[in-house]
Figure (cartoon, helix red, strand yellow):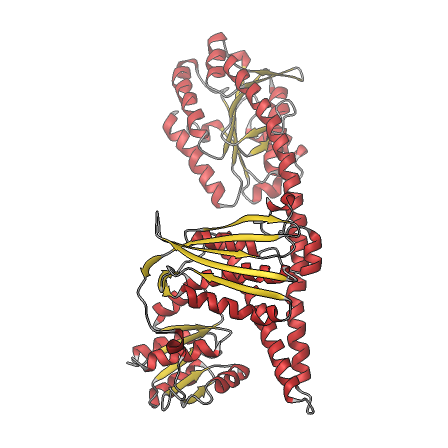
Length: 594
């Protein structure tokens, strides 16, 4: 519930939707109440509407308010406050129509919100009200509470005690949240028994809220500290591989570099580039997870092949340590399943990567098995003989920006995102990541489960047969490659070397459209972001012109929604950057075989 300052020290803060009344004897009582009331509203950027009557008319109210608010002229010029006499509001249609007046308050509030004000603060003085109109006005007041409670309106009604008998006072108090009495410079708060009880409950709630606020503040301070540490770690994690890439790239320029050194430097650059790319992917996925925008694909893949790919990533690191890697794949493991292989690969790379990083010597074991009931799932266990995790640190293990303790960050590096992201990805795949057991000095066992569909249990071609790729399989395949960056053109040129493909480069979308329209090409590779004309515009022109050959998008935007967007725009495929030679050639061969 949002509170706003009432401006009245006897009242304090009030909530939007409040409807209360004020009893007064003379003009001085009105001034003591309404001037600070509207001063607070103006300072809080609220729309203010002051409907006046005797004994304080509009011109008098304005003069007295300006003494307290020197900038009143400016507020009036901006339309933030309006001070009018009662007949221009309550009786502007010749009579006091309750429904019309209520709707007028609400409409006024909506206009205020459209102008950017926080809400509507209003008052109406009932001095003008005749005795014969009292019953109808009481019915109007009974509707105000219910109406105001649904809107960003604060309403203060003023009643002169000299015009009110006991029945009128009772009616007024009954139809308002509470009542204030101003007499001789003193305040009194009039409440019903129900209101007093509710006020007591609110005070109890207020104490509880203050306690909760203190706890939330401590939690926020802790979160802020963790994020500060995370940013420092992130800077280190980005600069470390980047420094290696730039440094070894400079060394490659040396003329007298030996072939073994050159090969070693290239491997270092490739390894650090892969690590940097993986880090960027994790950061982007964290943003998607936090925004609840993570998209999951359903593709067929071989779980064994995927595990072999993950193990191949870490094989060079394992060879540098006295560490043995063991695998245990159940014979009941399906040949193919349907799930999101990209996300599963991400999970396993994080967990196997942790096992390799934290194990200095000993054994790392990776197990995989399949369970069909109650729902088909693949279960992975990654067991290491590394440093282990103390029981006190296990509870916070899956929190973002967190590692078991600060010393681990200093010793081993890392961002503290891996386990958090892995669990969220696994949950999105219908499974989970849990720490089964861990102890300092003994190692850890993590279990990963994912739900799978379309399980294929029959035997298929062997891995050796799948890996066999004839040389020059793209012989005679004519490619147009639209890429504005010279470095990327050079990279693709070398990736296609020895494949037999014939390729021509265009430097922007406009040049690509012209070349594709005037020459025979079997396939077009099209960068999405280029000067003069981007890939989206180029493919739209080509399709409208009758070009029916495959067009493949090249883009650093690699999310599922980006691939969907390119597909809807007229592209036949999508290759994410950084481009991997294996992915590029696989895609080209698939289209050539169609």
